[in-house]
Length: 141
Image 1 (cartoon, rainbow, N blue to C red):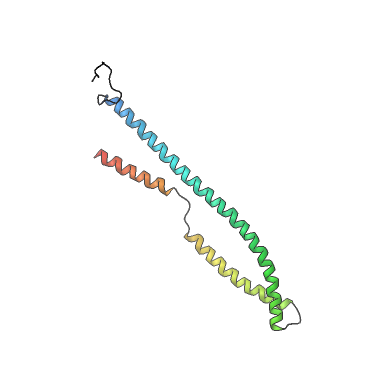
Image 2: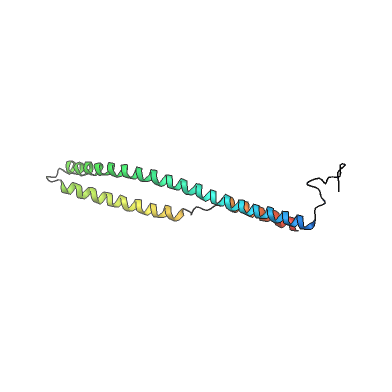
């Protein structure tokens, strides 16, 4: 179909079947590449966040460990004062037992939290791919 000046409009409906199939193939390929890129970006973003959280958590753990070290001395001396013991070692032994119990409880809770966590996966990209598949299947019908 020609325009008034004899030039065919660029996006006319008079495309050949081969051109249409080629265009659909290119667009489907582009769509798949974009879905893969979305998944990569999403996983990278989540991995960076996990890395930052791990770094800050490690720093917090070091400071907490140093504070715990000082607290252990205080607890040992507290037990010596409370029970009026002559020697310091029973106070440190009682403190050690107390913290072993607390450590076991914390370890159990950490184990349960790790079991409940899920690995990072590109949930948005997966959902988008499902929506795209549904849309393509509807067009085919």
